[in-house]
Length: 136
Image (cartoon, rainbow, N blue to C red; front, side, top):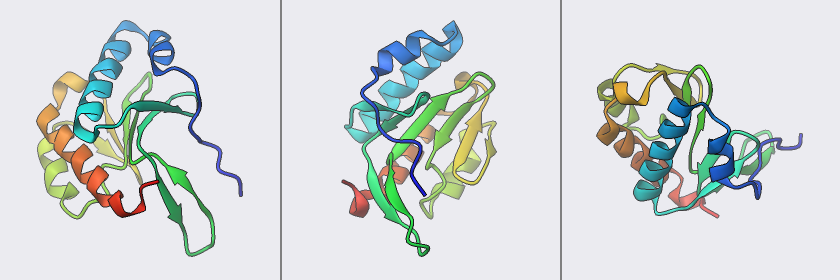
């Protein structure tokens, strides 16, 4: 199985410029929050995900690849925030985040203004710490 979502050379700013005004502004806010929390620069992963850092993974099945240590995608309906549920303390932080829903690896937020950005920063830091030993 070939990994489909990989880092690209596409400029993050150009991607953000294609979004509607609200999502562009929220995307810019998230870039700054993730950048300040991680110390890493944003990189486009595939056509619509903005990732920070990367780590190597390998499943028991033998499938392996790389993935961003922290990432988000400013999708039309909701902001998709990746990797925020992996740390053991994430559940307690998510309870304080504000209105959101969760998927397997995603936290979905409708409006950035509705959540606690300090808690989001905490979640990004937890995600970053979870993958520190696998960072590449």
